[in-house]
Length: 118
Image (tube, rainbow, N blue to C red; front, side, top):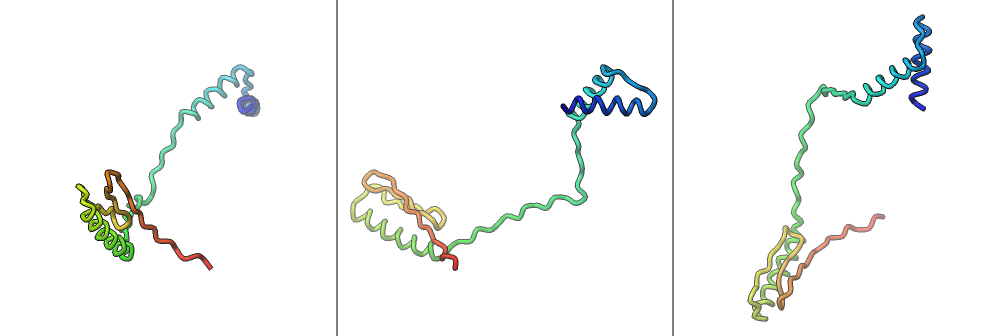
């Protein structure tokens, strides 16, 4: 479809210039033009350099940290009282605690919910 339009426009343009071309010649020119467009890569350089991304500093939620620290102390005491061989409770940032109990691994994740919109 696009090829036919291009062939007709090439033939019309050539006839207007006083140098008529045959359908086969116009078809060959159209194929060359479409092939050239397909292989053409356009590069431009920006006037201004790109801005470097500003790395956001992660804010620590002190309330969540305080709550999980208290839970961590409670879990460590519970594991010691239960005579668990591994009483290690690890904290990932201020959001979650990982520990083992009776040979099973557990994770406690604390989520702070936003107040509902009015």
